[in-house]
Length: 442
Image (cartoon, rainbow, N blue to C red; front, top):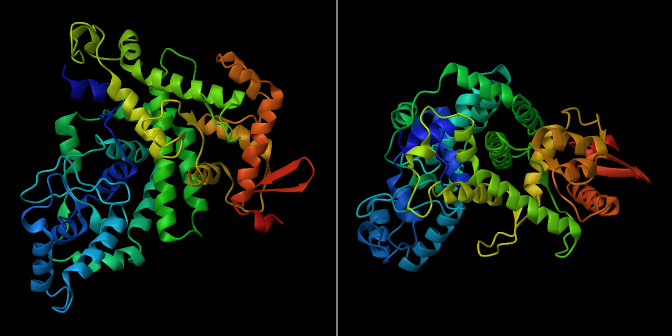
């Protein structure tokens, strides 16, 4: 057994350092099965590189290329082109996942911010084929296919503002067959029908939540639909990873702190929760091996061992995968990589995404705040103190140092954030209602 085979048997994909742009590209390439080279876009959008820009990426070369291709007037100056390049970079490099992809460079990966299928490009998959894996599982059920149909419709919509802005640079290249499926199988293996059905069954609640999210995104703008869909898919992936990792452990919960203070009991326990989840991921392969999950035990074969001092192996890559995923999808704070004491706190777009995945499509079918908290916990493992049983659940999993009053304050802070997002309203004292559009309820 090698590392790729172990990753395939454990998760179905390789847990790499992954940003949303990496995942989104992998997902939509798998879904649409097309890629483009986009050479002009890449050379214009890349505004810096290690050791400076070289060859046709040099500023003067870019100006000559644009003039020769009649993309700019000869009166446009070098300085004006540089301003344009900064703007283009801001459109397609939001996650800083783009790299110079043509000679004299040979990057490991290159993923643009997904604004259109026209920016999907083939490179070494820096998402470890996670996007393809998720798409494959969703394709196996009726409800999952409704999510994929929604994604295809969004991807096929007429060009939006951002795509129109960079469209002059999307010239001279036709769509090519991606071949992503056979590359996945060649690198990792073929997903057995039984395995796909098993994962789909275990993730049924999360897949249904994605379908509900898609229904609730009808009235949102094109780019917000893409963003919220990608965040929803990443939430699905996070839930899946935690289920796999908890093979020998209590089903993990995510204690989110919404109070904002740095010294509260909730903040302290949320930091502990983040650390435990990260530790759960670090031990996942060992736990899976103990459970007989692998065809050949990778721990006994020491395929992840870097030195004789660490007999079990070095699984920091699993910690990093969890940390990157939690941070980039808006589950964890602060963003600074040097801060060790991270805690769980849903960012506004992520909170809105999860709420839209649990709320009914009928805007007038409002639910009580405590019911919304129940649904967040049952579907996404999110706990904030809004359910009557949250305290008991947390204590059963070993979280202490807070009382019911602390949980009530945290739940009230969450309710306040939902009100600011126009997802909750308090029509009378003590009654908080949640809906996808609270204005229609009123």
